[in-house]
Amino acid sequence: MKRSHVNEILRASEAFIRSHGYTLPPFAYLTPEGLRKSEHGEIKRRRMGWDVTDYGGGKFDELGLFLFTTRNGLNADLGQRSAMLYAEKIMISRKDQLSPMHRHDLKVEDIINRGGGTLVLELFTATPEGEIDRDAAVTVLCDGMERTLPAGGHLKLAPGESVTLFPTTWHAFWGEGSDVLIGEVSTVNDDLTDNIFAEPLGRFSEIEEDEVPLHLLVSDYDDKL
Image 1 (cartoon, one colour):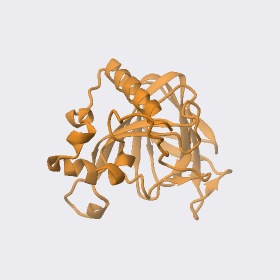
Image 2 (tube, rainbow, N blue to C red):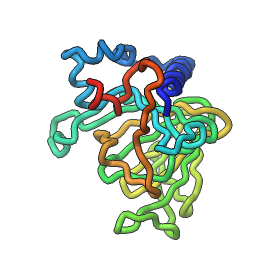
Image 3 (cartoon, one colour):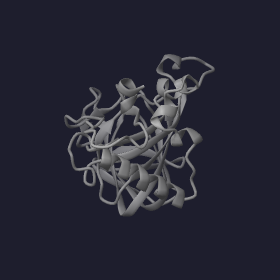
Image 4 (cartoon, rainbow, N blue to C red):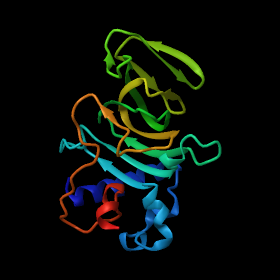
Protein backbone atom coordinates (compact mmCIF):
# COMPACT_ATOMS: atom_id res chain seq x y z
CA MET A 1 0.00 0.00 0.00
CA LYS A 2 1.18 3.54 -0.65
CA ARG A 3 1.67 5.69 2.44
CA SER A 4 -0.51 8.35 0.81
CA HIS A 5 -3.37 5.82 0.62
CA VAL A 6 -2.82 4.83 4.25
CA ASN A 7 -2.92 8.50 5.30
CA GLU A 8 -6.16 8.95 3.37
CA ILE A 9 -7.67 5.91 5.12
CA LEU A 10 -6.63 7.24 8.55
CA ARG A 11 -8.28 10.61 7.92
CA ALA A 12 -11.50 9.07 6.63
CA SER A 13 -11.60 6.49 9.42
CA GLU A 14 -11.10 9.05 12.17
CA ALA A 15 -13.97 11.12 10.74
CA PHE A 16 -16.23 8.03 10.54
CA ILE A 17 -15.43 7.13 14.14
CA ARG A 18 -16.25 10.66 15.32
CA SER A 19 -19.51 10.61 13.37
CA HIS A 20 -20.66 7.79 15.65
CA GLY A 21 -19.85 9.72 18.84
CA TYR A 22 -16.67 7.78 19.62
CA THR A 23 -13.47 9.66 20.40
CA LEU A 24 -10.03 8.10 20.08
CA PRO A 25 -7.60 8.45 23.02
CA PRO A 26 -5.08 11.33 23.02
CA PHE A 27 -2.14 9.17 21.91
CA ALA A 28 -3.93 8.62 18.59
CA TYR A 29 -2.98 12.12 17.57
CA LEU A 30 0.73 11.92 18.32
CA THR A 31 3.00 12.70 15.41
CA PRO A 32 5.71 10.15 14.59
CA GLU A 33 8.17 12.45 16.39
CA GLY A 34 5.94 12.67 19.46
CA LEU A 35 5.53 8.91 19.61
CA ARG A 36 9.31 8.49 19.76
CA LYS A 37 9.47 10.19 23.18
CA SER A 38 10.41 7.85 26.02
CA GLU A 39 7.18 8.42 27.99
CA HIS A 40 5.24 6.71 25.19
CA GLY A 41 7.26 3.49 25.31
CA GLU A 42 4.36 1.39 26.58
CA ILE A 43 2.33 2.26 23.47
CA LYS A 44 4.98 0.59 21.34
CA ARG A 45 5.53 -2.33 23.74
CA ARG A 46 1.80 -3.11 23.85
CA ARG A 47 1.38 -2.43 20.12
CA MET A 48 -1.44 0.05 20.63
CA GLY A 49 -2.50 2.47 17.92
CA TRP A 50 -3.31 2.70 14.22
CA ASP A 51 -3.50 -0.36 11.97
CA VAL A 52 -4.47 -0.64 8.31
CA THR A 53 -4.18 -3.85 6.34
CA ASP A 54 -4.98 -5.08 2.86
CA TYR A 55 -3.70 -8.56 3.82
CA GLY A 56 -1.07 -8.23 1.09
CA GLY A 57 -3.65 -8.31 -1.68
CA GLY A 58 -3.33 -4.72 -2.84
CA LYS A 59 -7.12 -4.26 -3.01
CA PHE A 60 -8.03 -2.59 0.28
CA ASP A 61 -11.61 -1.74 -0.69
CA GLU A 62 -12.30 -5.41 -1.40
CA LEU A 63 -10.02 -7.18 1.09
CA GLY A 64 -8.95 -5.14 4.08
CA LEU A 65 -9.68 -3.69 7.50
CA PHE A 66 -9.04 -0.56 9.55
CA LEU A 67 -8.23 -1.08 13.24
CA PHE A 68 -7.14 1.01 16.22
CA THR A 69 -5.98 -0.74 19.41
CA THR A 70 -6.94 1.43 22.37
CA ARG A 71 -5.59 -0.83 25.13
CA ASN A 72 -3.71 -4.12 25.33
CA GLY A 73 -2.12 -6.40 27.87
CA LEU A 74 0.99 -8.52 27.41
CA ASN A 75 1.24 -12.19 26.49
CA ALA A 76 3.80 -12.64 29.26
CA ASP A 77 1.09 -11.85 31.83
CA LEU A 78 -1.37 -14.49 30.64
CA GLY A 79 -2.00 -17.01 33.40
CA GLN A 80 -1.55 -14.53 36.22
CA ARG A 81 -4.44 -13.94 38.60
CA SER A 82 -4.11 -10.17 38.63
CA ALA A 83 -2.84 -8.47 35.48
CA MET A 84 -4.03 -6.64 32.39
CA LEU A 85 -5.28 -9.71 30.53
CA TYR A 86 -7.52 -7.89 28.08
CA ALA A 87 -7.48 -5.73 24.96
CA GLU A 88 -9.84 -3.38 23.16
CA LYS A 89 -10.04 -2.25 19.52
CA ILE A 90 -12.23 -0.07 17.38
CA MET A 91 -12.45 -1.19 13.75
CA ILE A 92 -14.18 -0.27 10.49
CA SER A 93 -15.40 -2.83 8.00
CA ARG A 94 -16.44 -1.07 4.83
CA LYS A 95 -19.46 -2.10 2.83
CA ASP A 96 -18.68 -5.45 1.13
CA GLN A 97 -15.03 -5.26 2.32
CA LEU A 98 -13.94 -8.74 3.38
CA SER A 99 -11.86 -9.59 6.41
CA PRO A 100 -10.80 -13.10 5.39
CA MET A 101 -11.45 -16.41 7.13
CA HIS A 102 -9.29 -16.86 10.23
CA ARG A 103 -9.23 -17.92 13.85
CA HIS A 104 -6.97 -17.47 16.87
CA ASP A 105 -5.11 -19.92 19.09
CA LEU A 106 -5.38 -17.88 22.31
CA LYS A 107 -7.69 -14.93 21.90
CA VAL A 108 -11.34 -14.96 22.92
CA GLU A 109 -13.12 -11.91 21.54
CA ASP A 110 -16.43 -10.12 21.60
CA ILE A 111 -17.18 -8.51 18.23
CA ILE A 112 -19.71 -5.69 18.60
CA ASN A 113 -21.60 -3.75 15.95
CA ARG A 114 -21.18 -0.18 17.23
CA GLY A 115 -23.11 1.47 14.40
CA GLY A 116 -23.62 1.82 10.68
CA GLY A 117 -24.73 -1.07 8.53
CA THR A 118 -25.19 -4.76 9.32
CA LEU A 119 -22.10 -6.77 10.28
CA VAL A 120 -22.14 -10.17 8.61
CA LEU A 121 -19.95 -13.02 9.89
CA GLU A 122 -19.40 -16.31 8.06
CA LEU A 123 -18.74 -18.97 10.70
CA PHE A 124 -17.29 -22.47 10.91
CA THR A 125 -16.22 -24.56 13.87
CA ALA A 126 -12.74 -26.06 14.05
CA THR A 127 -11.84 -29.74 13.88
CA PRO A 128 -9.79 -31.19 16.77
CA GLU A 129 -6.72 -30.46 14.60
CA GLY A 130 -7.77 -26.80 14.24
CA GLU A 131 -8.83 -27.00 10.58
CA ILE A 132 -12.17 -25.79 9.19
CA ASP A 133 -14.98 -28.29 9.74
CA ARG A 134 -17.19 -27.84 6.69
CA ASP A 135 -19.90 -30.18 7.99
CA ALA A 136 -20.46 -29.46 11.68
CA ALA A 137 -22.87 -26.82 12.95
CA VAL A 138 -21.36 -23.91 14.84
CA THR A 139 -22.72 -22.48 18.10
CA VAL A 140 -21.83 -19.00 19.35
CA LEU A 141 -22.96 -16.67 22.12
CA CYS A 142 -24.76 -13.53 20.98
CA ASP A 143 -25.22 -11.13 23.89
CA GLY A 144 -25.36 -14.10 26.27
CA MET A 145 -27.73 -16.22 24.18
CA GLU A 146 -26.71 -19.29 22.18
CA ARG A 147 -27.15 -19.20 18.41
CA THR A 148 -26.54 -22.29 16.27
CA LEU A 149 -25.89 -22.03 12.53
CA PRO A 150 -24.96 -24.57 9.87
CA ALA A 151 -21.33 -24.76 8.77
CA GLY A 152 -20.58 -21.60 6.81
CA GLY A 153 -23.75 -19.93 8.06
CA HIS A 154 -24.03 -16.15 8.04
CA LEU A 155 -24.60 -14.43 11.37
CA LYS A 156 -25.98 -10.91 10.94
CA LEU A 157 -25.47 -8.36 13.70
CA ALA A 158 -27.45 -5.11 13.76
CA PRO A 159 -26.05 -2.07 15.60
CA GLY A 160 -25.82 -2.86 19.31
CA GLU A 161 -25.60 -6.62 18.82
CA SER A 162 -22.48 -8.71 19.49
CA VAL A 163 -21.02 -12.19 19.28
CA THR A 164 -18.41 -14.00 21.39
CA LEU A 165 -15.83 -15.94 19.36
CA PHE A 166 -13.62 -18.60 20.90
CA PRO A 167 -10.41 -20.02 19.35
CA THR A 168 -12.48 -22.92 17.99
CA THR A 169 -14.50 -20.56 15.77
CA TRP A 170 -13.32 -19.74 12.26
CA HIS A 171 -14.75 -16.42 11.08
CA ALA A 172 -14.74 -13.97 8.19
CA PHE A 173 -16.76 -10.74 8.16
CA TRP A 174 -17.85 -7.71 6.13
CA GLY A 175 -20.23 -4.75 6.21
CA GLU A 176 -23.63 -5.08 4.58
CA GLY A 177 -25.70 -2.09 3.48
CA SER A 178 -23.08 0.47 4.55
CA ASP A 179 -19.80 0.76 6.45
CA VAL A 180 -19.81 -0.66 9.99
CA LEU A 181 -18.09 0.61 13.14
CA ILE A 182 -16.95 -2.45 15.10
CA GLY A 183 -15.85 -2.78 18.69
CA GLU A 184 -13.64 -5.63 19.86
CA VAL A 185 -13.12 -6.59 23.50
CA SER A 186 -10.81 -9.56 23.92
CA THR A 187 -8.10 -11.44 25.67
CA VAL A 188 -4.61 -9.94 25.16
CA ASN A 189 -4.17 -9.29 21.45
CA ASP A 190 -1.10 -10.51 19.55
CA ASP A 191 -1.39 -9.88 15.83
CA LEU A 192 2.18 -11.04 15.24
CA THR A 193 1.56 -14.68 16.17
CA ASP A 194 -2.12 -15.31 16.93
CA ASN A 195 -3.83 -15.04 13.53
CA ILE A 196 -4.37 -18.32 11.70
CA PHE A 197 -5.71 -17.72 8.18
CA ALA A 198 -7.48 -20.27 6.02
CA GLU A 199 -5.42 -19.10 3.03
CA PRO A 200 -1.80 -17.85 2.97
CA LEU A 201 -2.06 -14.13 3.72
CA GLY A 202 0.01 -11.36 5.23
CA ARG A 203 -1.49 -9.76 8.34
CA PHE A 204 0.48 -6.55 7.79
CA SER A 205 0.88 -4.65 4.53
CA GLU A 206 4.08 -3.60 2.81
CA ILE A 207 4.16 0.21 2.73
CA GLU A 208 5.51 2.24 -0.17
CA GLU A 209 6.79 5.53 1.27
CA ASP A 210 5.49 8.09 -1.21
CA GLU A 211 4.75 10.72 1.47
CA VAL A 212 5.37 11.42 5.16
CA PRO A 213 3.27 9.33 7.59
CA LEU A 214 0.34 11.15 9.15
CA HIS A 215 0.58 8.72 12.08
CA LEU A 216 2.70 5.62 12.52
CA LEU A 217 1.01 2.24 12.19
CA VAL A 218 1.71 -0.49 14.73
CA SER A 219 3.53 -2.28 11.90
CA ASP A 220 5.90 0.72 11.67
CA TYR A 221 7.04 0.56 15.27
CA ASP A 222 9.92 -1.87 14.91
CA ASP A 223 11.50 0.08 12.04
CA LYS A 224 10.63 3.69 12.86
CA LEU A 225 10.70 3.96 16.68
